[in-house]
Image (tube, rainbow, N blue to C red; front, side):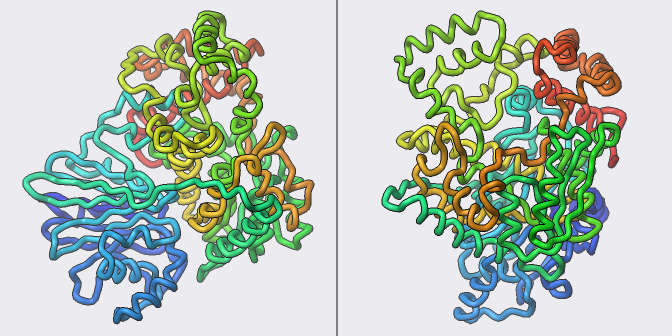
Length: 614
C-alpha cells in the first residue's frame, strides 16, 4: 500500500522529514503527506489501492488529537467499521486507516489484536504525548526503528534513516555472524547498530521524557493444538473453506489484482480460488530450473492471461547491487532475485498481486520437516551415544554423511535453528577475520522451542520457522522486492482464520517420509488436479549453482572475494577455496558462496563506493 517514516526528537524539521520520505518514494509513487509538531514528524508515501480519493495520509481523527500513518491492508475493516458505528463512531471515508483511528479511540492498545491483515502503523496521541507502533501478527509488513538517547526514528525501510542528521551509521558485526548461519538477518537486530525490527505480533508504546522510553508488548501468539477427531478428508474441506474466504478478502481492491504463478501447489491453488485475469511467471534459460511452461499451460487451462519473464545470468549479475539496495540488509536467498524480476514485469500491468507465501510454514511444506520421521530409528539411540558419535564425526572432513552425524549428536533444539543453516560456528571461526562468538545462532531459536516444549518435533520446527525464517527471509524479500516496483504483494495463506485451521491439523496429516503438505494437497487436488497438487516444491528457483561454474560469473565472485572490502571481514584465501572447490565439482558450495557474495555486494552499496540509490 505505501511506506511510512517519522521521528521523535527536539529538532523537527520539514526538510529532514521530506528527505526521509524521498528515500522510499518507490513504496508510494501516487502521493505523499506529512504531519509535524514540536515533538514529532510523520511522513507517508502512498500507493493508492483502496478508497483512492479518501485514503490520504497522515489521517487525523475528528478533533485532530490522533494522527495515523499506516502501511498495509486491514481485510476485516468493514466488520470493524460496523462494530464501531454501533458504538456511535462516525466515519467520513471508506478507508481502513480511519478504522484504525476510531479503533484506537475505542480499544486503545487492544486494537492490533482485533485486526486481520498485513500492517505496520503508528498512531500519535497528542494529548498523551505517546506513539503507538504496531506490526501484523506474521510480520508481512516491515517496521524498523532507531533509538538513541533523545532521538527515535521509525519507518518501513532502513534507508530512510540514513539521511537523518542524528543517525549514526555503524555496522553491527555480530549480525554478520548470525547472517552467515541463517543466510538472512534474523531476530530483532539488524546490520546497523541501534536499528531494530519491531517483532511480528507486537506493539510498542514510545514516550518522550528526559530520554526516549519504549515499552514492547506481544498481542498474539501462534498456538498449535491437534484435533485428532477429524479425518483427512474433513481437514481438506476445512482448508478449502477458509482459503476461499481468505482469497476473497485479499482480492478487495479498487484497482486490478493479478497473481504470481509457479508450477507448484501453493500459487496454483491461490489462482484457482481467485478471480484474477492476469498471472505472472518467472523462467530461466536453464531448463532444469524452468517451470514456466508448466505454469503457462495451467494458466491457459483456466483461461487466464499469463506473462512469462525469462532471466539470464548477465541481467541477473548486473542487477545484484540494486536488489541489495532495496533489501536494506544482505540476503543470501537467491529467490529474492526471481521476485525482483517478477515484480518488475507485473508492475507494468497491475498494482496488486497475490502470492503463495506462508503455505510451507503453516502446512509443513519443507523437505526438512520429513527429517523427524525419516530419522526416527537413529534418533532412538540414546543422546549420550549420539553426542559421542557426533563429536568424533566433527573432527572428520566435511561431508553430507558426516554433517548428519554431527547434527544428530545434538537434540532438536540445539541442531534446528530454522529452514536454513549454512556455516557452522567451526567454519565461521576459520573463515572470519574477527570471530566474536558472543551470540550463538541457537540462542535465537531456543526460546521458541521452550515455548512449545510439549509438542512433537515437526510442530516445534514449524513454530521456530514462523518466528524466524518466515518474517526474516520469506516475507521480507516479498515486501522489499514487490515495493521496489510499487507493487503490493498479498499472501492469502497468512490469514488468522487459515492459521486457526492449520494449527489444529495433526502432524500425520501434514507430513510423512514421502510427502509434505498432505492435507493442503488434498484440498487443492479438487481444484487443480493431482498432477499439480502433488508436484514437488520448486517455488521460483534460480540456477546460481550452475552459473557460479561459468568463467565469467565465477570471475566476478572471485574479484569480490579478493577485494579490499572482503579482507576486512574474511580470510580471503578460504573464500577463494570455497569457490574453487565449487567450480571443480569437488563440493557443492553455492549457498555459502552466494551468502558471502551477497554480503559483500550489500556492503559495497551501503558502506562502499556504490552508496546512494542504484
